[in-house]
Length: 186
Image 1 (cartoon, one colour):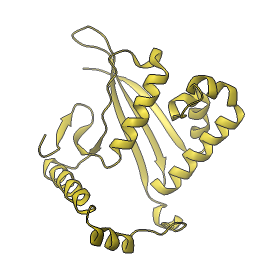
Image 2 (cartoon, rainbow, N blue to C red):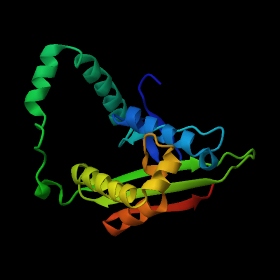
Image 3 (cartoon, helix red, strand yellow):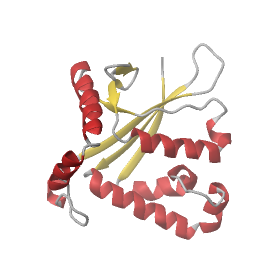
Image 4 (cartoon, one colour):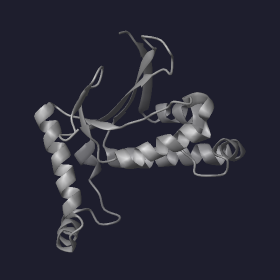
């Protein structure tokens, strides 16, 4: 789509996500490691929720133009002046009222007119910056405690969050990162 906007049932108006390239790669790595969970026709896309079509189109176009401009050295120099330096970041107080929520709709790989669908949510009270550290720390703990199991599932390759299993989900819940799922009705 030229404007990068689409509407998805149960998610609303969506647009281009700046993190989609990395996240899609990770999810597809999981799907190749654990084919029994994903199925032969698995397909994944990631989008950013937008308030409306106009905001979604603006975000899509701004990301496209911004990426194009990053090719230019003077633009990169200018961006470095406004981006956090290594070791710096937002203050904890700045994100105390933030809420991060990721949503996903999954449609089962069934040859029926109305295949089963599920909605998954991951919710965290705080900012993305502390969430990143929390996810890394909890993943590291699962890997350290279950090294042989993780090696087997990941085939000694790149470990993805899905390869860490239910223990990772349980650890996240204990530190305030809640995951919930429910079946959707049509």
